[in-house]
Length: 601
Image 1 (cartoon, helix red, strand yellow):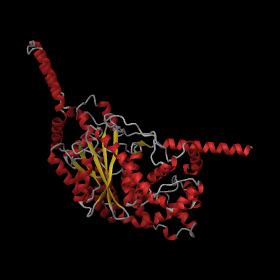
Image 2 (cartoon, rainbow, N blue to C red; image 1 turned 180 degrees about the vertical axis):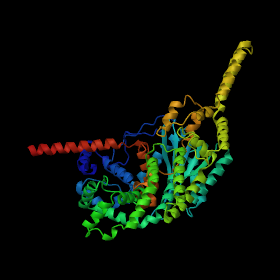
Image 3 (cartoon, helix red, strand yellow; image 1 turned 90 degrees about the vertical axis):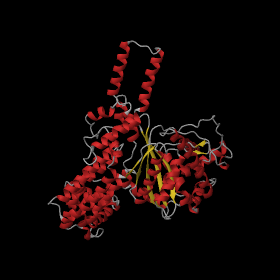
Image 4 (tube, rainbow, N blue to C red; image 1 turned 30 degrees about the vertical axis):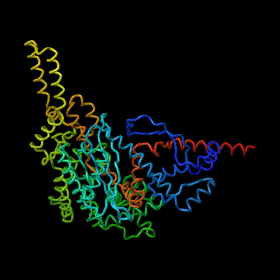
């Protein structure tokens, strides 16, 4: 841990760089930057040479990545601990930490703005919402696009406080400010929201504003992951009590290495699968399905463990025959959901077309269960509720905009399109949109080249040349509809990398690829599916819930930008954390060497 070698580092810096601990600004060199940040179009500014307060900057990174409020460093016991390790340590005040974080936030935000200025394609945005322990509503706005190299890019634009009464009007007002700040109102093509009524109302108002400008088509769509999560929650209602019993048993195993090792031995003896501890006990989908998995696949081992450790595990956690039957039925019913969610969480670019394909399959499974004579009444009742929510999602996404987005996925096209979305009228509208918005500049350049050539000829060309030019124009016109040619070919295999496919085939479809680059940036989910379905999301929720108002925007924005590869800056100075760690390691090595020499003497 770097904090434990700080005493040596402090002495090293005091000897080599007197006064370093009295200056709060730092000059460094950045190391990693996956997200390209454009340079300001101005004369180069010479970076000021200032000393580094290494220890406090390492604390800044710790606070940021751990999402800890600055008040953490105001705890006296923590400060005393640092003093115990090194009496010369000078920790900034909480006020100084907050001020530095605000400056870093402003500097990094400027880089994000410069990046957005250089994006030439259409962009999409996603909205996520949460409420803190202070009962303050926050909204994160993230922007996505596909760059010229067919690489998917995304960056957090901002995290905003939504003022009271926190309804659609307030959300729309704050969202509009972010869009204007980044000057993307003429390039934004879609907004994916979290399915809440207030977010839906805000997106509706935003669409009205953008449509009135008549700049480009705009659509808002619901988050598929949240919709699917709600659908599954309806299905699990009837088995909640059983899942709670299984979870209590699994938590007891997670706490005891002896019990968990016994469980592994029993499952091996009974041939009930391989299990790796600790098992996921979260209240998310991943944890709920894991509970069903344990009871379904390792029922003998579960019963044996409970009976063996009856003093530590309540015998009431033993499942009766009716409960075992419920587990068996529900586990089998939810298996297609498990496979779908696994695909959503592991897919690199989760396109709208692929998600609609998955959701259509889920709807079919629900209807089969609902109409099956073999389904028990309690499961049919759950399936009815699930079908209602699935239909609600389908109604919201069935429009010409999502149709255009789906057919531009070479794996989907029209062959794998759901019937209720695969309408001839949508295809015609998609064709018109393509011709009107992605062919004009191409035709203009072609026409201009012919006009220039005719002018150079003085307006007099041979009869044969006239015929040849007519033939060329006819050939050009027959090839203008790249969309028809694209759709006439069979879909690519489902495992195909969509962006790589378009990168390879962009020369075959030069104009259609521009449309694909725009529409494939549209997001099917407002947040990462893994954050919604897996235990990772619980940790994110806990962190966001516990951060006070004064730190929420700065900490979470800086963290996102750091993890995205944007350089940490304080005013004009770039903070090189890798270099700081090298200095700390070097100082520790020097100290160890000196200590070894003293012992030898």
